[in-house]
Image (cartoon, rainbow, N blue to C red; front, side, top):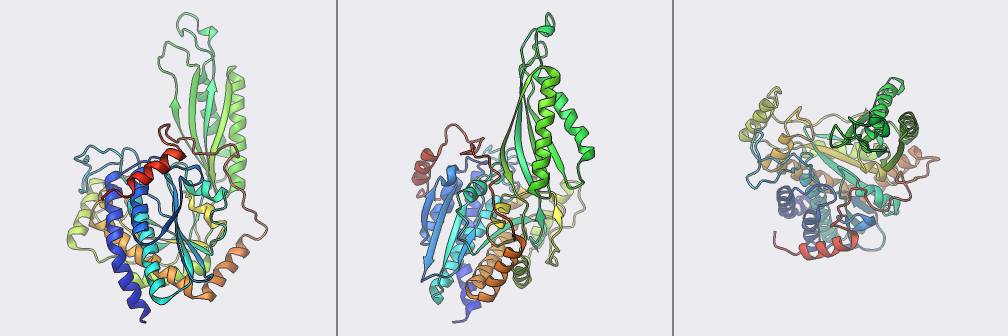
Length: 477
């Protein structure tokens, strides 16, 4: 058989599923931990393609799942990490200007996760078809990786050892550029700092109160003073979530939401411990009490050189999508609306990055410390446009985003077939991984008492989610 022809045919057959997932999940635009319908769309397509759903409400995350298909004796095990959560406040019509959706939906895929999930699920479906046609042994496992934007399901799955038997794992992300994600991403901790004081009348008898807001303000000042003494790789960003309700009432409760990032877990843990000391000190100074709930953490992303080099070759083979003039004009108008130079869309692939460190974080990192992991970026938005903005949502709901997702599907499917059939590549990837992790034992950054995501809606739990997914996955799309 002509393998390239068969892969091309398999990808073409998988394309309708990619289109359906991308469109339906964009329309649903469900935020983290509420992606019941979006997960059901993926499950429906995977089951229709012959995958078995082996887990729902996986690892305590109601909207997570695992689907699997295998053939033959042994063979490599390949994982995929589709995401499908949207962001609040980034709903936008599929037009090149900031405009609300006609249906009133205010959340939107401002990070392109409708495309991200569609291409990874599509790549698994395409690879399965080639494996069947050519009798290739192996296992394909699709992890429904819910809630990446908040309390990533991958972290919970990793703690339960659900990636331990994989030989390799793939990911990708929508972007303004076409590149292999051969980068180091930051480790992080996310925490809620709560202060409890004593309420009182702020005008008549303020001396009887102890302001939780004062404690939080003092802690924030301490955090900002601490910045001077952190290494340049560190990041601290926070918001006040609760700071009282009326100025004539001494606030007895205040809450700060903080994220700490740095180059590795060691640096993050050290800063987190310092944050706890600042919180305790602020409470002591204001005669209040403080609690620090570090409810999730992530490792830094670990690259893999053999996989990166092979995916660079495949990325250059597939190339960027052929953009129409209408699509380029759509992109240029988005850039103009954002105050950017109207450069349009990326038309070439980037050279292979040499593992630069960047400030963002991803729960893909957990898998990268457990098994060889690599991914790509494919253009689905205009050049220079930042993630988490309305143009990303707009482009993700029209042909620009879909073309990028289809191109990513092809690269990921080709990479899958390579690791399934090239024993030397697989061995080299494993050797690189073993060298990078020598002396390392994976320890989950989740606190042991954290059994489910902190922000899980009260109406959704692991039992209810399984029932919801079962009811919704067979609904017509």
